[in-house]
Image (cartoon, rainbow, N blue to C red; front, side, top):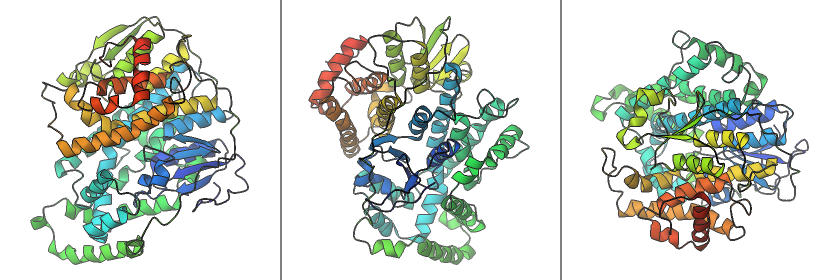
Length: 548
């Protein structure tokens, strides 16, 4: 696993012949699945540890590498890839000797669905972690002003600083929301239990990226006092025990991650969590001094006083090795045969459903449509949940097999159909570049979704409250920061990847075209390259949304 790189210019380890650098965070399950993949493939790499507790992922040095501000990021020489699923797909294409994706398109789509399901679970799990662990730890080890001062070493972004204040104040989730999230997380185990009923692994009864995607975060259930018992989930516990003994799973768990798990699972942290789940008048006075002393110990453990004496970020973050050029490999597409019937379950107000409809038309595929009105919660009906337990559109019914998640659907369609008018990446580097555009698009949901929600849910019981001028300005500003990457790319190219549109163009178009129907339309129209590209995409897709 090479060495830890601390500062820009640090030499790579001698065994790292591929110049692979993983921007990692030891406790992160997303990073761990990349470590597992590289270990399975027998690769050597070096590591840059990004300290999430200090918000290093929001430092300008890191945002220049990964505009989404998440871990992990992989640098393969001068090639930079973001998001764990994209990274692991690239590793599959570039180092195919040990395959971790099934050979058929339908099984490859099943792997993608498990990855998407885990991402949906993460959106529920992360706030619980902050509410039950991150918040209490910061609350007892530093003052609110000190927490903000430390955060400012990495970022001055108002949203980031507001988040830090909410974490310290224990305002991430209410007690009721915590219990709702924990119940959702427990229910999420049921499809896994069912999938493993007569199988050792999640897809095709062979070890794959599906197992790599799901296992690391399930290991963290105990960090929030969620027990996965053999009585309730015998198949899940059997599967987890098998994977826990696999060498790549053993070696991918870092000492720092084990230490963090030990801390949050300790009896003392359980006491802290229990106390903070009570109103102040209900808390045990006898524990006040014990918790205060524990806070002093954590203050020393995390070096709070040293950080408070720092005047700037403590280092220049190591950058990718621009002098190493990757030799791309040709991608081997999964085997596929064309189905007899395709039905698209979508919603006309969903960018993700609309992009799949556009892709189907671009590929000249015959399909039926079934409208699922999410505003009226038709996605929560039993017949739809039977197709997608996550209750999200779109779903593609391929003969009798449902495929959910727009990326899983798009990859299946790309493996099954082709069109001379659509750019299809062929090499490992081309696919990674294309999918990195998709990862960037996926990472915009925090900014785009609140701005789009008033249009999507207008007149329904789910219509959101007004954002307020300050919140609206902030979200619009961050949205434009993300879109500047598109604007700059389109200054050099007709479309994002080639002279022909790719699925990445369709995905971004489906998002931006909807945003032109919202209150940020004027800001968007100031981006001249995007405005030209929108007209090209409108002609290509035949889309009827007003983007003129």
